[in-house]
Image (cartoon, rainbow, N blue to C red):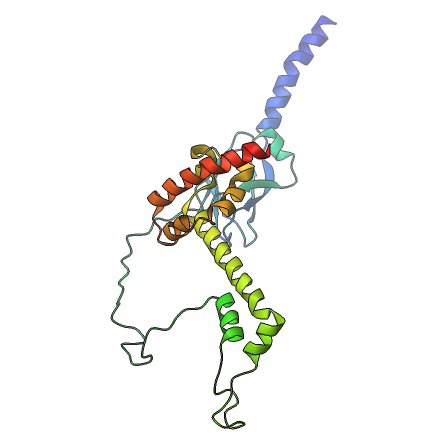
Length: 253
């Protein structure tokens, strides 16, 4: 009986070792945020065998437990993965890769301020750039004295602005323009400042950060500094407004 137990004790480790050194045909797939996953090099560093992925990121090769698989290409960061026993039991071995960030040399952008539509004779003065809401409001509110020229002596004014004023459409468009301006301002704040700045530096609770933005953009001084990209002055005003905002939150609670 003791002999049988000893026999089993010595045989099982040998059997497990034999299993781990067995070659297994591995079906693998890589996933990455880059669009093109074709021709990513997949190398077994132990056997020095290499294959490449197809356009879907699929590949296959023979491996053993403990083998190191290396993924490399010009569009992804090189990554090494050690094959585990559990990986061989999978029907598809999936590896997540990171896209490679390529640092560009310094790019010089030359601005030719003297070349524009006015200098080229296309316009007599620089054209005003309108946002969609500004264009709709301008169309609704502008008077056109020549709109019905020829129908009445000396011409007449267009009827659209009058109708819009009566129906209240112009007032609605003015409100829409204000909303658009605030949305654009909120995007500028989000672009210029990390949300963590408000929670970590100004002690605004994370769930109230966006609410603080809506509160802050009612301050004209802040609007001017955000639009002029003066971050240092904007931070000063934000700090001042944060104190008042936190007091309001305390009263609310």
